[in-house]
Amino acid sequence: MYNLYLDEFQWHFPTEDDRTWLEEALANQTLITASDAIRVAAESDPTANIVYRSQIVSTQVNNERVLWMHHIVNRSARTMALDAIATHPNYRGQGITKRILQEAVDWSKINNPFDVDAISNYHNSNESHFNSHNMIKGHDIKTYSNVSGDDQVMQEIALK
Picture (tube, rainbow, N blue to C red):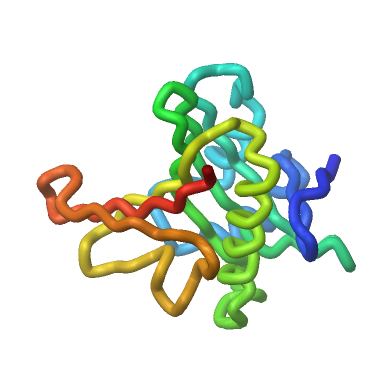
């Protein structure tokens, strides 16, 4: 079942029907497998304090799957962490991931289904995710250095 999510895109929770596509999108990485993505979607409890979300984003026009994303909602901390994104090889290098992230942040700011205050992302200090190449426009992005003492940076987009 697909759910309306964004202006150009929609999302759904991955199932066994998505396995081959997920294997293609997640190829050449070692942290998560297609089985993991499907399992997280099936086992996630949306009412828990910590919610793990595994989603596939597809185009609304022709229902082509574009990317998979994983995020973690921490209700008590009132944050949602964007944990992983994998764009399918057929869509890489076209700027579509940037468009999807922009729409997802815009949508979250308006709809905010988990009532969180911010979307965050952790990464190495030599990387810059949210504000690289003007990835997210029109939102205040705060950057915090050395958040774990291991040269890690947290970027945060305020939703409220």
